Image (tube, rainbow, N blue to C red; front, side):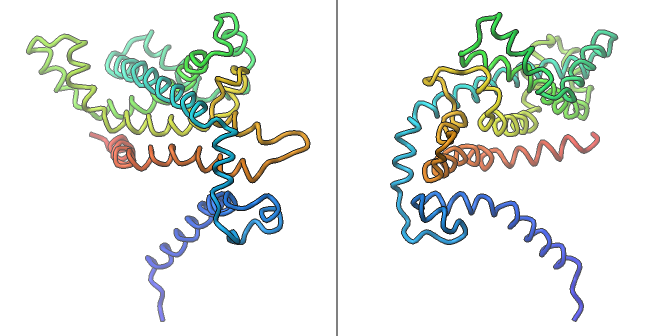
Length: 273
């Protein structure tokens, strides 16, 4: 019997999906186990599904507080990045000049310079601006770090928008600011949601940057709070795994809500107009 190529590809894709989902399966099933049962066999199903671990993790995390901190950082970081990036991308794409080419090169440099290189200088700058141990300091840092990629993403999308639309609006007396907000910005909705979704996963799950800036326990984001379950001598897996599940769910919900726009934005950005 001949096996169709489509069936082979379907089997391969299914295998890849299983491999990628397997860690989530491990986290989920072990989040219901007591610590002793968890350490005996991480692959088995729980002998009894109990939400006691979730109750303890919820309480020890002070989940509402750390959720609020993560939400503030994620929402305002995204808002600033989208506002700055959309205007910068439009200016760089539509107005070619020596200065704009230099600025574009600076943005491109931001894509290739590793965070570890700027980690210490960034901390020093934030300290001098009195933004250490401050959620706004984390937000400002994300603005600087996420704008280069988002500008790159939006520029490719703007390139495919016919410039004739703007010329016609200009002839009708439309100002540059009005043209951007009334014509260009609505057309950017798919790619803006794509950028928001990608950046949300980063802002929500990032550990290193908030850990560098925040020391106040009341300002901890979810990843920093979860790290408190791992000490030098004790690792509270029975509490850390439920905490991870509670941290993952909001990010997954964001992706499920915006996935249509993500696909539309990536496809539209790849097609020459």
